[in-house]
Amino acid sequence: MQGAIYPSLKDRTVLVTGGGSGIGEAIVRQFIGQGARVGFIDIDAKASQQLLASLPAQARAHFEHADLRDIAALRRAIVAIREALGPITVLINNAARDDRHAIADVTPEYWDERFAVNLKHQFFSAQAVAPDMKQAGGGSIVNIGSVSWVIGQGNMPCYTTAKSAVQGLTRALARDLGPDNVRVNSILPGWIMTQRQLDHWLTPEAEAELMQRQCIKRKLMPDDIARVVLFYAADDSGACTNQNYIADGGWV
Image (tube, rainbow, N blue to C red; front, side, top):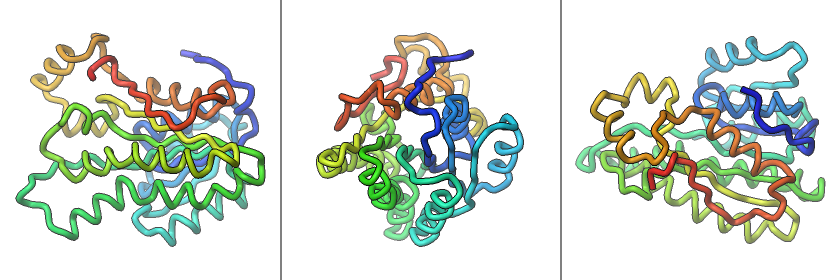
């Protein structure tokens, strides 16, 4: 289904982390549909190459393979995307993993690794593209959080703690980058039915609870989040910064 068209996104260079599958893939496709130049970074080369092959022939897309836990590799990937597509003025910090883990099983090393997967790269991606945005006269950063910490979801304390910190990071970046006309917002998705969620976590019991809790009685899909991302990236949301928008079907 065709959604809104945002003329301000046409020809902009967009960077999406974790763009090879799931919500990230939907975000990449939606920006391509807007006529943007889209660079994306992902650790899954196979899925990312499949995404590239499925895009329209006229799509301007560039994939860089990198493990975002390696900040040097992240920085190299951003440089390569800039060289391929031009200065980056939209950043979508999407990459994350919601692996379950018990409190008793968490080691200091696992804690640090989970924060590297779910939070650390968001800051360093923003740091890397901020000069592009300043030189261009402005830009938009959208950080993807999660409602998991808002609802107090259990069985993944490292994930929920890191995702709660996305809100603090968003507000800090919005304040510091605002004088350069760089807007920073975060989106907190609810339970989005990516293939990963369907394969690992969605049981009949969990689905029944979800439908009981959500105001909207349908499964939320990756495009539901991607369309919200488009709005916060576009000039139509030009007065919006320092905000955390919940897109969860009314769960919270």
